[in-house]
Length: 302
Image (tube, rainbow, N blue to C red):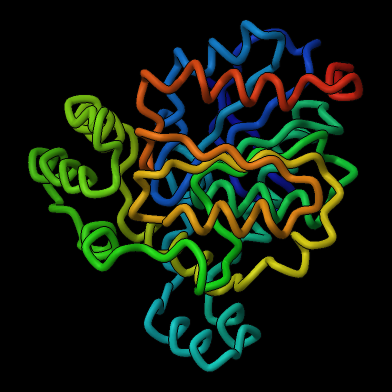
């Protein structure tokens, strides 16, 4: 693992798989989740297909920079967005998804990569969409996984899933690991993999537990607002993957994303929730590998 520091002064922890001479594939993780939530075997599977796979900790997560001392008044930001005042919401938030998208590009630049394939999961899908909208010339392809468009009418959580997500986990390690079982409400019904969820929670706690950072990431998502207009004009080749068991971001979030992006391909997976269960890695990786295997995409981007 290694670190880079962005021009904004944000330190990003990252690691890579495969050869730097292969086309770059940047994995962008979701809300409150560290880069280790991209399992090593999944990364190695993608790298073995001839991709230079990069995973990293978003700001305010894991071993990347924590913006300590910056207030995230989520209630005030919610009130502003409910009133349609996104300018005020963005002013209240410590940062937005645009800044997190900038982090992704800064990492690519530091690695000497001008153009990359993007795969974003959940909030990471929102970040990857933002990257593609803002700088499409640097994006070889976009894969938006279990994500949405920022429009509140699509991809809504069930009340139970929302409550499980937003209820603070206990501060002690044992309680934090036990709280990981709440995720069963949005995980695959066939492959809930709760033992793996508990193991990941323990590793994440030991590596860099930061509840305040999670609140700032939540503020960024809320304040950034809808991306519908940008997605309608997107010309980047786009794949949308969503699980039919997902109750945290309903499949309508993925369906709406695919409907907005011209020419987007939609892959709805049975037995997948708001997770990536190991039995589905072959299908997920095959779809990503096929999507990133265009003649242009197979040229080295470094």
